[in-house]
Length: 453
Image (cartoon, rainbow, N blue to C red):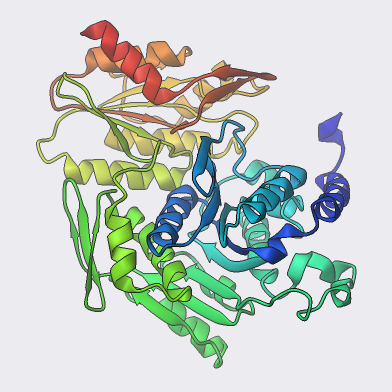
């Protein structure tokens, strides 16, 4: 029945619920500085980096992300499988943060939540976009609609609460609630960054790696008044256990690997600079981050294996992940991939993901991963249809049970090999039909390693 109701009609209900939630909790976001991070990939890592920078600067903060919640000194795991919660849960959390005396809230903000008014009423001080690549096309239908949903975060920098659709802005004024400077932060290396740079903001930051910024030049030619503060990583060195780069005269070292994590760190750096935090403090904070749960996370073991847990659920994130593994795999050890695809989501990406993994991995095991109401065997077959240059039963298997799939990978692996388990990251549950069964890839890997010892 739900699928017969157009999303636009459902969104009317979501909007009414959001208005009620804001009234119920007293529009708490007006009393805290909210930093919103959106994008296809890198949101969670960027949120954690922003939080670390603010804490290093002595700020009292709250965090709501795909993997965790934090209010001042209290922190707990996000077990909901939602990046951004319902409007009532969001407003309740903001109120908690305000009541705990937090100055900042770092809020990971999904395209679904923006489209469905779940964050209606949240007054964002800062909007960050990490990138826009293929994802959620089951919901947004095409990349333009997906990008437009992301852009709501930037539109709302100047249109507080999305009230403009009701012309209610005049009800509130800056004499009652303190007005914050609005900041837009955009990845200049993403496709079409000028789309996001052209939204109104008091201050705009653009970040980039050592690349030509022709995208920005094009944007400036279209808008002569476009003023961007540039943050650029230079002299980049990608090591096996760390990355180094320079911003102006300040050296940065990251223990989370890959160029994509430098991009995430640059986004977080822009947030820090916009809050008048020095590059030295930002550098010190980022160097303290040893890992982000479920994001290129190594599992220690006594078998000499390189076991990596990563969330990668999009073609772009898989490509970047395996490119990084290829770079650090200097001894040309075997790469064993365990992955699948989520049910009731963009079906078109499934064979693309299969093809990408088959390009890098020596052995592939396609398995179950949050099928929801779909037939998991069909999902596996659709992923497998994209696999090239592999023979089923020799270097490619379809194993429905995810634990058995992980077990198979560990049995195949020899000293120095890479076992790469993707798709769930640090999630604590698996969605099968309407059930949510307890599941954590890292814990399962550790349990299966224990059986082998």
